[in-house]
Image (cartoon, rainbow, N blue to C red; front, side, top):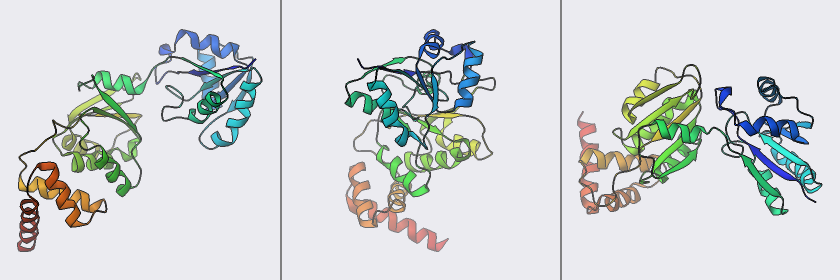
Length: 284
């Protein structure tokens, strides 16, 4: 008889948010795979639980190597509990490989629902919540980040991201450049913790705010694109969109054609705006 893989949601800040079943699963599991065993010890102490199962580390550095071992334990009948530092395993955290391995072997996978930074940030953001998509962490390199943002520039659903505090200013600046500085957003910092803060504004305003430095765990919620279709865009906006595409690696001719298609304009009109901007720069 095969075992069961249990994905356990853990508090994203306030330990009182721990789901009631978490303590029972920590006590009953035969194997506990933890992203950080030291944090696991603090969690079990806070919940007054003494695990009886074997505890192993399962983090980004050993996830690929340890997955077969845990899959074998599941195949042998073990109840394996997977916990990460905060939130739900496999959502921008270790876990996907093990879930896929368990599913491939026909092993039952279940979950202990718990706090979610994605849904919490979305709920308090003040932005539309009827449709949204989670984009995880943006790429660290500037060029790759712009390229990824360009892929969702016309996405009409609300966008949710995770970001490291020391990269937040660069990411917001890139979003203001690619999405436009007037797109609304909310920076949700230290959710459920003592110094929780939700900073709302336009991408341009938030980029200026973040340039002064931000600390803590960050979840970023960004308004979706406005209704698609032909738009009346100022020449400056046409030029900005062409430049964003050029910086991402497109040739100018291709960038002009793409922007013209987006705006429902003749390519010549976008070309003339680009030339006029270039001449103005030279004259200045």
